[in-house]
Amino acid sequence: MFSPFALLPALSLIRPGRRTGVGAALAGAVLLAACSQPGAPWQLTNVSGHLPDLDFALTADNGQPMSAKDLRGETTLVYFGYTHCPDVCPETMARLMQVLAKLGPDAQHVRILFISVDPARDTPAALHGYVGAFDARHALGLTGSDAQVESLAKRYRVAYQMEERDPDGSYEVTHSSAVYVFDAQGRARLLATDKDTPDAIAHDVRRVIDASA
Image (cartoon, rainbow, N blue to C red; front, side):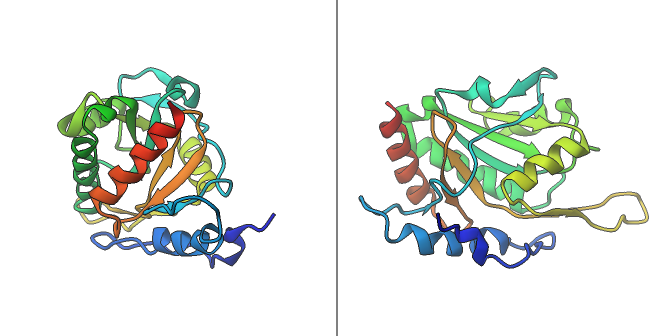
């Protein structure tokens, strides 16, 4: 079977404060395969069959272990970021809040996973406060060991890298900023980038929810 990922160059990283090129590159490559697929066109990038199912074992923001099995039956939006992110992460989370608002009653079937690429600073407590400031009902923060996060990022072709520390010890993390949409069975279905509007994301997420009903 043709894999659009064979067309991808080495993943590039986005510097703090800028949008990622990774999600756009991934979306463009997958689109080559998606355009010929039957059915009504998606507004987001269709990655069905080109990314692995949702699978992880991490620590939730309540301090308890959590795996992908705990989310079966829910449409899951996955974003890799970190709580000290100055702009892209809060902007993305705010955009996802708009998506939830547009979904209305359908939002009850959606969970947002904010997976930290900065586990050294993003403790469960820190993540709990961060995601809770956006939506404690639908959003959940997840963290783990460096090895766990690195393995999961590679699974979904997410790029991230710690920048040099400032004299005060602070640092930023460059990272890709795509949002992955998984259906109620944990299958990867769609990829949303910062170019996709809340309306477009809500439209396609509702289709995924309806198809799982």
